[in-house]
Length: 526
Image 1 (cartoon, rainbow, N blue to C red):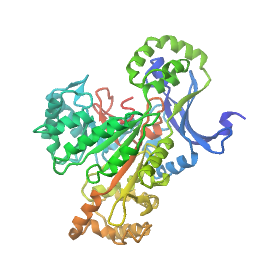
Image 2 (cartoon, rainbow, N blue to C red):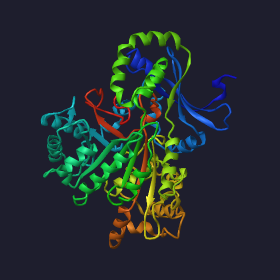
Image 3 (cartoon, rainbow, N blue to C red):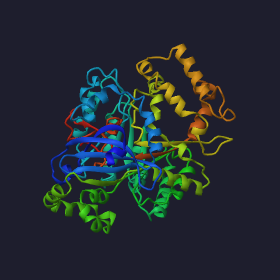
Image 4 (cartoon, rainbow, N blue to C red):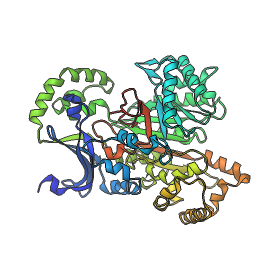
């Protein structure tokens, strides 16, 4: 029995061939792909693979998820997403997220579609900060594309910028020309954030600015990271009413997480969210493209990716001819992007610091689509929260007088709430106010989803609208913390079913649509 006969197809998608793109330099060519589950030899469990088929280089397999049950429970949260426009595009030979924005009615009316969750505005090019006039042009472009709203989230990244004072000036300039209702995220490294915090006229003093530290953590660097982040926390806490978003980028072999989780848990009210981004280093991706050089590549240090790129590029033509002849119609392994290994590592690390969480406490972030219409109704903006369920997972931890770091999933049936609310999203998304019938229906649903009535009062929803309980609500929200896992897609594992649900938009000079606006955050503008 052939491999294809043994597999069960979960869904069809499109991908790209890394060899056509990077070796043969043909540019981005979309190819047919499918996500399947297979039973492995000497293993009772089914595993999930992304299988792409290139007419030149044959079939390529990437381990998507080591447990099919987990994956199928995850994609349950995709069935209620808005499918019409995205799935019409699947019948095309070529499509991408840019097609959705291009053909969307949002460009004409900006009424029937929600805003991207965040727009990345690059204020640097070739490691140099751009001129003020160019910043003005980019912001004008963004505002013209969303003319009927003043509520957008703009992210300014400065990880490759060394002149922090000049970067601070540019951020302040952006702040001066953006509408007051816009929110600004600043993403830089630990050292640069430390310097930025000490500046007399730091952009961090602005109340609408939210700082985000991004750290690339490798195995063996855990103590150094904890020491540096602790020093940064002490310095930043000198600024009144500020919070820090912490993003930790990890790769296999994964680092130890006990000290990181301990630091996070002890900073309630200051670090509300820690995001773990799972990435594959360039050397691992290249092993799939150049399998004959696997041993040579594995002996190189992960920090030598730039040299590896140069060496690979010198042999592109030679390897292209070899691969085209030898790999045609072959079955090739393109590595592992399975998130379960890292989820289980977090669970094990949490237990070491007496934090009891389970795999079932991590839910797909697409679940938050169920609260999407309420953001607009309560005046927070009309944002898109339709994230692909396999792209990220979150665990919400609740702390009250009777609970300490307790998972929200054990207090409230989030899956049930999602399933019921998603049925009404179409009718609610354009509503200007909640009607009496809808309000009573929602209240009844919320009450039915309570799992622990000892710790969750039946009328807890009334706390959100009762002005006399404002202080209680603020204290409760300040103690909520979220562990989020971003299962990043790379250019060797593109799944356009996932990519078309990305709620993040970025400004790209290479963008061919929207006058320079393109997406998504993982793979950038293909």
